[in-house]
Amino acid sequence: MASVNVYLDKQEYGKDKVRLLKVHKDTKVHRVDDLTIRCLLSGSSFTTSYTEASNKAVVATDSIKNTCYVLAKSSKNVDTLELFAAELANHFLDTYRWVEGAHVTIIRHRWARMIIDGKPHTHSFWRDGDETRQTDIFIKRGPNCKGRRTIELKSAIAGLLVLKTTGSSFEDFVRDEYTTLPETKDRILSTCVDSTWEFNVPAVDSVNLIATLSQIPFNNIYDSVRDVTCDTFAKDESASVQATLYKMAAKSIQNWKWLERVSYALPNRHFFAVDLNYFRGTKNLQEHATVYQPLADPSGLISATVARSVGARL
Ligand SMILES: O=c1[nH]c(=O)c2[nH]c(=O)[nH]c2[nH]1
Image 1: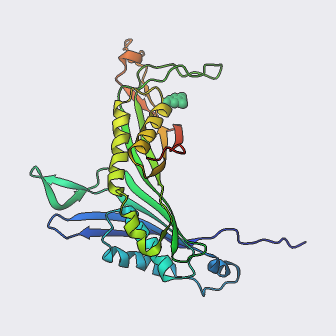
Image 2: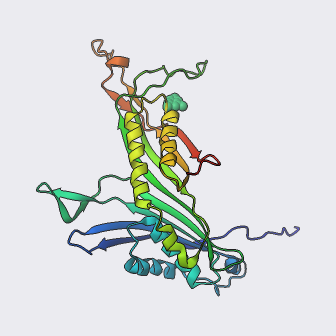
Image 3: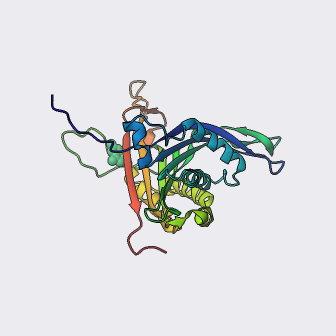
């Protein structure tokens, strides 16, 4: 059989699912950051670890995990996911001169402060939902100047489950021989929001990286995108998931000059009014609907990315 030439096309490696809880004890009112971290390294020096079984360049994934804990201890930025992710990624580039790219993803799990005897408790928390905040940063060494860094940065909300009981219609769609869905002026709208916002970050020298990124109000932007998502969802007289999605994404780009693109993936979790006519002619359809059956599968899935127009930078 003729031998076929192959080559290593892409590679990155590191540690996934590094779990850590940082407790901020700087005041009596403790705060917590419960994180899941992924740190992946790449660069041509790692090629031989795949092709020639040489581990000479390999920083053990165990050491990568240990680094997450060490930096979580020393960092002042763990409560701003984007900055902590940047510190981690840049650490690998600064420490190992052969690492060309560092890709860090952090998921933050929710812990809300307990209200006890009517007051926020100083050190007790509860999980108020599965929604997470996430960030994903890829820092690359500049091609000519090794201290230069190019940064791709995006953040996200995942798993924000929402439902409204009116203020949503779906009419005027294609009707043909495949159509069974009736038009409706009033339906339940429910979705599990995944939203991602991409930052416009200029290339920067390693020594200025954290100072430069610190100018971006990451926590305010996260709060704001979440607020815009909920506010638009609640107030919009929705003609469709598509139309409501576009309003949400456009608003956040208009609100924040650092945002380049905002994406949403919105599954349409269907609730259908149960036809109760079988029981003594009970009316429960259209304007009479109060009892609904949630449909687990299938769901619609509406996704789109809205971008800032060229020349539209504030
Ligand atoms: O908001 C909606 N968009 C659709 O494209 C669609 N399709 C469908 O069956 N229901 C809905 N709802």
